[in-house]
View 1 (cartoon, helix red, strand yellow):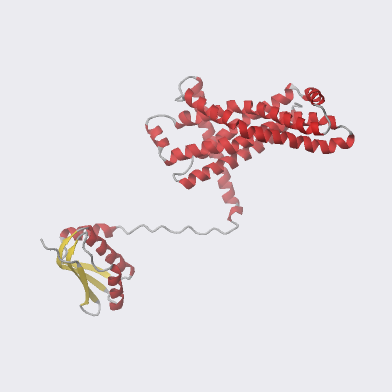
View 2: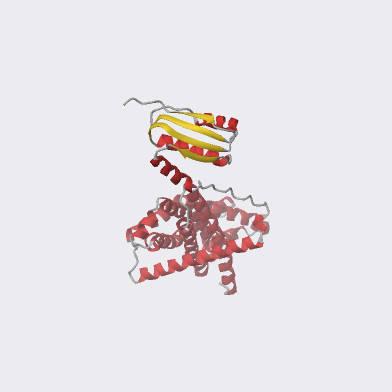
Length: 376
């Protein structure tokens, strides 16, 4: 069957009415006049009504429907009445379906004033939502840990072992560097003041006590917040994007027990070990600086032994357990609540690090106040 080229002709019937005559075969592969041509002709006519005439129409497919829908939308935008005559019944039905519901137009968000973040109501709402979300997450985690203790949780030992390796041995390099340098910095700060009184030997006490009680655990926690906390958020956020968490839930497995619990336990177990390692490296770093001050290694070790006590060590280890729990909660909560695109994953990782550091500072201050009141 010979194909007729598709085309249209726009004519004026009277002052208010224009007729669009459709002719030929409107099918894939046949070229036809551009819609812009029709749009320009319609603007020149200034008609109040458009009638589409399909008496000369041949074969058709979606090409015709796309063109007619463009014509309909243009008439709607120009407040021109749209009607038809002689079109096939299927074309009329499809056009009615396509034009019954208007296309969704997403409204641009209203620009906030620069001082919007100072709104007390907004600040209260954000703090309330964040607090309630954190409490809800902690409650679900507590239930999952309780189920684990009675052997009813869907938590795999292999996952716990893998996360322990990720949070422990893989972090030795960065922990070693930061702890050694922090120990040297503490020794330098103390040496400047102590040498003025001829008490340079007491730099060993400063480094040992400072590393055991405060700097060793705090620097290890900050490093783990930026390393492991962000990794947890990115891993869970990517799983959220790929709908893996939805699949786990559909299979009847709790994401809290299967994904969150092994990560939390691994970091809580590894943080005390990393803290002890950081303490040792920090004390070694202080000894390097002390050697430059004329203090022999034996003198440094002897003075350091006098400063070591079980109370100082216990304070640091208690902080390490609390810090490990806070880092894991911040990272896992940010990841599990992440959006479903790549930008949301990056935002979740950033939120995990910032939240974890805030948690660490607040918790460190609170623990120090408690121990001071207990005279520990």
